[in-house]
Length: 332
Image 1: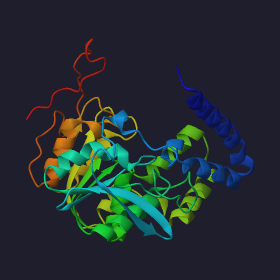
Image 2: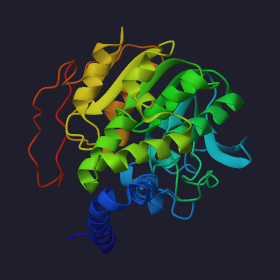
Image 3: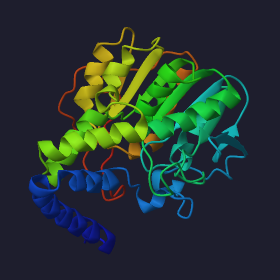
Image 4: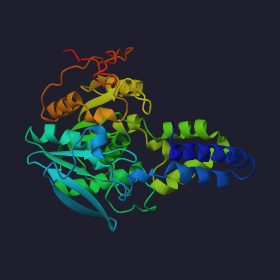
């Protein structure tokens, strides 16, 4: 049964959609501001008052991993994070509405290979301070600046591992900031902001008049034109590191096909596909953690079941013992 909060969110969207139909004709500037506010508003779990429970993804808590905390300053605000191990640095970057605790399943595989793991909460996420637009609002550019502030503290990376929208933020930091890395891992990456605008338009039903004003508001907020915040485009403007893309064929939030195209256009890039893990649980999968750690350690990554061109996935049947779908076994 849907939760009360999910019902409220659905009702709010329906009310907003109805209002935007009127605003498109009579007040497109007002409509654009309403969409902008909805677009950049983070879910409640992103705030420091409600830290992510890593057990939901099968990870240990940051305290259990015996790391040490750190703080860095970004334009008068504090970005908080944790670091574990010693050796070449690997940065972990969460996605929209996420936190560093979602990435804790990756810590042990990486530190066991003699790597120092550095993870942080972007501004307005997790335990970090509220960002420039308040405690419930952020964007890919602000997350990229948070990463860049951390990179200025810990230095060049052996690898950067970024989930979802964090991939776009990492690419921005590579192009425009202090961040430098030998290797890049994108886990379930989003294609970019232009596709988000398309999705918003489909979900909320607004037209060209609101869209023109919305992209102008987004550019004023971030300092970047919407068309420039696109993963494939940014890839042409950086010195390309070695790339591994991890993506589930059943991901409903980010299309697997886009990752296949990105890898096809990136010399030497590898695609590690999974089946049945979706957009979030892929972070906690032991085989994924092992593949990411091997890649960061400059070792070959064993091909996954669906590496290369996407094919129809098959899943092992649900058993009474498991109570859930098991991911199909990978083959070499």
